[in-house]
Length: 426
Ligand code: RIB
Ligand code: CA
Image 1 (cartoon, helix red, strand yellow):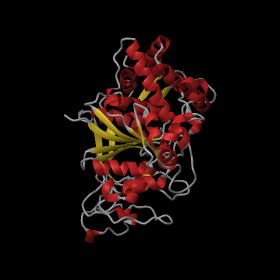
Image 2 (image 1 turned 120 degrees about the horizontal axis):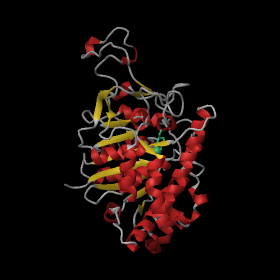
Image 3 (image 1 turned 135 degrees about the horizontal axis):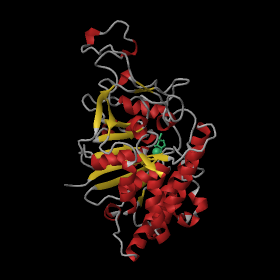
Image 4 (image 1 turned 180 degrees about the vertical axis):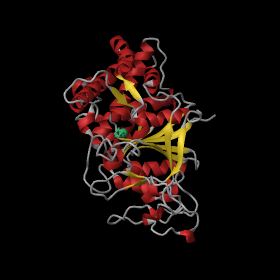
């Protein structure tokens, strides 16, 4: 069985890093991460890039430490298939730039580059992603290429299209755990190639629970609502019916008659309750950190900072009373967990749900709108229902999203235990 092939579009961020580590902890015949495409989101794109390069640097130190201590090296897929890393969108297609640094910290990783600077590689790596610098460097650049990833000088959305063009159609899954800007740019530039993807697995949105960014919106979809709306529209039998009003200069691509995007959605409704309890993390990472594991020490710095941040946020929410034992929601790792266990019968779905993202509302930017009325959709063009405003009742319109509503491990921290076991090899 050949390894699954994925692209991870991400805005590291604390839980993004845990998702990347979970994916990269795979064996070579389990998973091949073809591309890590970076986007603004939790923090600005420069910090996103530094956080990603720091992760690869720490993984190199970790494998050396494990070899010196007679431990299983792990992260085999990294050694056999070093992923391409490409830098993408610096801001949303439309609207102002919003980041989640209030939660993820000034550098997107709990201040780890300040509290533990010895884990941050010298910034000589920056030129690896700079097209001009690479062209000038010519042959000398080969001496500086890192071992466990391959830097690209292409913009992320073009690298995404290149990978989709070169790989067999229907074999590459895009796992999108940040704002969907890179995906929307790729679809806008070459829709036919973009639709060669097997599926797009999205962490984003909130449907039947409150938002984590505004009362009705989840961060990733709020951060670039236009992109989310455009990507969801690619699931529709008639994409025109749910595309947002075209922004200045955006030309709508002509849609191929047959191909539709297969979108698997992990909204807050399911990701919020898949947890990494503080005790689960510390039981695994503390002894390894004391033994000298670079990975355990690095992660402890930013995970501990995140738990402290959550204690403050929960304390404020609880009217100043200290909240015991906070947990970290594994929003992004949830998507990788699905990739690695997709055949498990424990996954449960709400199939072909008409979920539409609002891109233009004054108070509803990024909201996932669904029809909760009991009226039913009708099947034929001529059976338009009188009063069917915005075509919620016509079977030929609206989006078709595969919403995940249940997982094999259930909630209550089981995923957290599996994640630390895979990431720390304990
Ligand atoms: O709302 C959760 C999402 O926003 C996650 O992807 C997290 O990394 C943040 O980006
Ligand atoms: Ca993210």
